[in-house]
Each structure stands twice: as C-alpha cells, then as structure tokens.
Image (cartoon, rainbow, N blue to C red; front, top):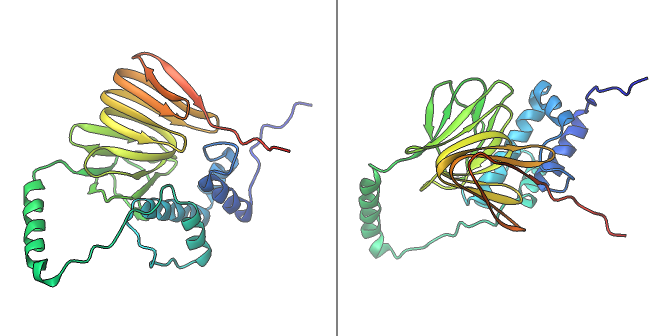
Amino acid sequence: MAPSSRIPVLTCEAALEEIHVFLDGRGPTGAKSLPLRAHLVRCPECDAKYRELVVGIASISSGARTTSETYDNPETERHVRRSLIAPETKHRLRLPRSILPLAIIAVIAILIARSGEPQVVVKSLGGTVYRGTTLVVADESVPASNGDGCSTGVDGRAEVVFGQNSIRFESESSFSIERLDRLAVRMFDGRASASGTALILFASGALDLAGGSASVVVDDVGITIESKSGKVEYSDAAGRHVLTPGTTQLYEHLRMVEVR
C-alpha cells in the first residue's frame, strides 16, 4: 500500500509551538512547514497570533517599539523580545530646553526639504494583505513605517515601492520594512520578484539588486534566486555570490546538527 500524501493536521497548541520555533530560528528549516501553512489558512486565531508576533519582532528590531510598551498577552511579549531579529537601536536624546525651538525649526526645514523625495509605500494588488495588523484595501497604497511587519494571505499579493524600484510579494509571504531611505525589506518566507535597486534580507544572507531584476523563493529547502537582468549579488556566511542574468541558484538553509 502506497504511503499517504496527506498533510498532517496540527492542533492550535502544536501550531503555536511551531510558530515559535520558526520565528526563533531553532527549526531545521527556514520557512513555515506545510502543516503549519495549512493550519494558518483554516484557523483565524492562530493566523492573527502569527501576524502579531511578526509585527512585534519587526517593530522592536527597527527601534519602532520601546521596551516600556507591553502586549495584551505576556507570553507574546516574552516571545517577541527573545526572538529579536536585531538588537534595539532606539535611544532617547535629551536636549536642553533653550535649544528646543531651534531643534523644532531644523526638523521642520528637513521635512520640507524631503517632501519631494520618494517614499516607501505598501500597495495591495488584491486579496488579503496586512500592514501590521491593519488590512490594506485592494489597489490602496499606504506609506510604510520603519519596522512594519507585512503579510499576504492565500489569495493576496502586495507590492513595496520606492520611486522606480519595487518588490512584489505573492500569496503566503511575510516580510518587514527595514529602511525608509531606500527599498529594503526583511523576508521571512514566500515568493517575491524585485526590480530596480533593492535589498532583501534573510535569516542567513542578503540579496542585493542594483538596477536589474530577480525573483526569490524562501521555502523549506532554502533560498532560490533567479537572476533576470542587471547586477544581482547574494551574500552569506560563505561569502559573496554574483549571479549572472539567466541563472538560478539555490542556497540551502543551514541545518542544525546535534553534537553528542
């Protein structure tokens, strides 16, 4: 009798544990498993919890959330803080009261000078698209904030745009906004295609695109990059890899090996 190809069914408790393992980077793979994906599709509560954790991690790693902020669920707060993608970079700056008016004028002048510069925006191309925990309406473009955690549902597609540069994300993708002065995102899993100048960060490397186009898939096996045009480079612990147009390369996730 041939073995069954059915996807194992996870309980909510098992799904939440796998979400923690995935976001902590403690699992053997770098993307959500098929059982977890299937569970998130049919369980709105666990899907909302996953998005909350992604948003929290992205916010703290970008310095958008202070350590004094709390979450409704203490367990969520503890997990977010131990799963930081990068150390907090937000520091408070105290200015003497005498120079506060000058500081305010300077800030206003900078904002006016930058009013004509391009902005990083998140656009829904249809279906379910979340910016943080807010649903983005189809064809709506919303200004991004540093640390925004975003995700697309099984029917959703999204685009992040900065000037003439863009990254399009297919369904079941999750990512966060890393920079506001250029197109830079951190991709957790899913499929995307980039054009122009863009930086895509992963758990184990970074894709740097300079005036070209490329597509990327993050799944259970690794990171697959297809170079289509222009200069495409991928950097990881092994060094820098230059991909010529028309080539496709798979970079497998680092596997955890138990040492006895």
